[in-house]
Structure formats: C-alpha cells, structure tokens
Length: 91
Image 1 (spheres, rainbow, N blue to C red):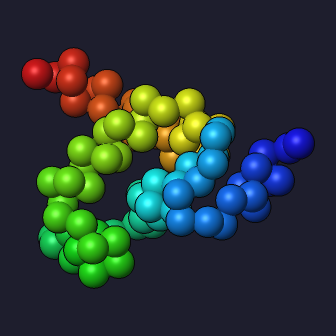
Image 2 (tube, rainbow, N blue to C red):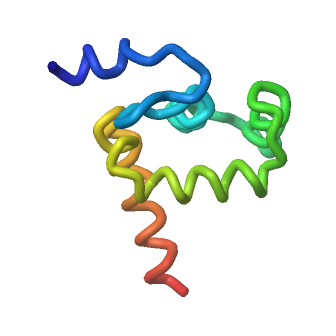
C-alpha cells in the first residue's frame, strides 16, 4: 500500500488501528494552510474544528510525536517538529 492509499482509507470519524481519526487529519490539514493577520488561525480553529486554541495546540503537539501523523503527512509534521525544536532550544 502506498502513502496515497493510506490517506484515502478511513473516512470514518475515529480512524482504526494505524489510521488517524478525522479530527487528527483535520488538525494537520489546518496546519498546511497559510494564515494572514492576527487571530485568523485562532478563528479557524474555533469555527472549523470547534476547539479552543489551547486544546488545539495540545492535540497538535501530541500529533507531532505520533508515527501515524508522520506517515499521513510527513512534510507538515517534519516542518512543525523543526519549528517546535527551534523554539524549545531558544528557551
């Protein structure tokens, strides 16, 4: 099975073994988008996902350590991991 096939599987709400749940896929999809201006991303998080931004970032951070997320969207996950690692090293 190639990566494209894995992405097409599991359109259910919760995802099965080895697949991301719909919410997890939606979080990664939102991260792929570019946002301009202050508050635009936070508004999208609330309106499109129904999450408070704090909860969104908690879920996103956990996703970055999930091998299923890396298999689903390696470009986005690796980009976000690099950003997270840079921020951690600046502290």
